[in-house]
Image (cartoon, rainbow, N blue to C red; front, side):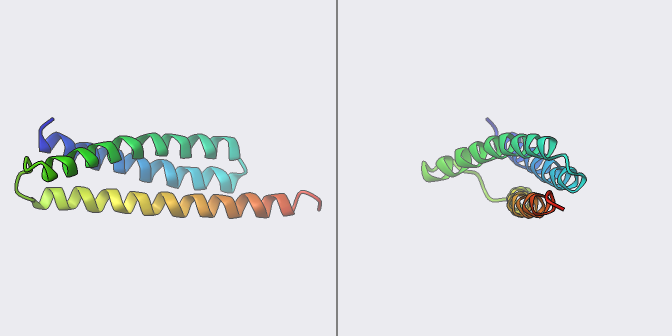
Length: 107
């Protein structure tokens, strides 16, 4: 796969991870934890695809097959790292919401 295609996979799937993670938080706030988990699962699928694409780039570089680092590559990596951070925070926020919701069940 060409580097440009891999870069676009990183950006596209990173965007999916971020969007699904944010929507998962919104669903948890609404109390729809089943839909929230479904969205986190979708985010995980996109993250796996992006990670695999990233691994391919790294392996290419190790094997001496890499091209020059471009601003687009840096942007793609930044986009993916941001998505991973949002996803990690979403999981923590949703866990907190679920815990708080469980604490209020007896009221």
